[in-house]
Image (cartoon, rainbow, N blue to C red):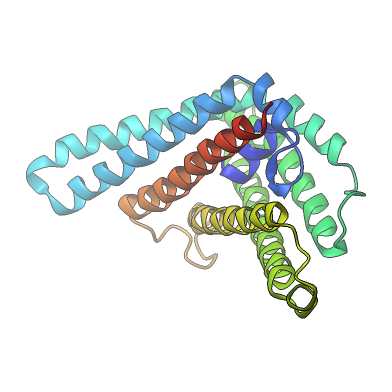
Length: 260
């Protein structure tokens, strides 16, 4: 699962941001699994990166690499189980955001609503796939894994479109002729807008890395599906996870700085 979805769950009005949607710090505090999930995600992808490199490039240490890949797989399974508890938090976020009436940009509003819908549908699909693998349900898990991955990829694509739109809009506001002519934009507001641009760029890069992996996990024949070696999947996931953790630390620092 990507940082985009984690942010929605992990903040209820913050950065999905103040950088992404304006809303979710409350859920962040109320869902103790989310911070754990970030740490597990980062560790899992790091293990996959190192393990993949050892298996492919260092035959003498291939056994260690195989063990790291096994650990990565188990950590991924752990996160899947933890996500069984995320549906309610995601529903609360989606309900609070609604149709995005507070958004000024109609494009941002549309992609945000569609992104929330994709995220909401992602969870039950993944739960059914997990239950099928665990022999709790008698259904074909492969179809449900594919469907959940497709919803995840759609959410990431919409998130990239949203972040790109936000970056372009904010940069235009900061450098537009009206601002240059009047020079009335307060320093604090300018600083906040610049920070939001940086956050949107980081979110865009994180989503792009996750989207590359999401396509890889789709059925063969879809673009580059199935063509990434384990180390590349681990590298992209590690980049996304580190960007995610950096944003979380930065958002936390900004929140403490503004707290009286």
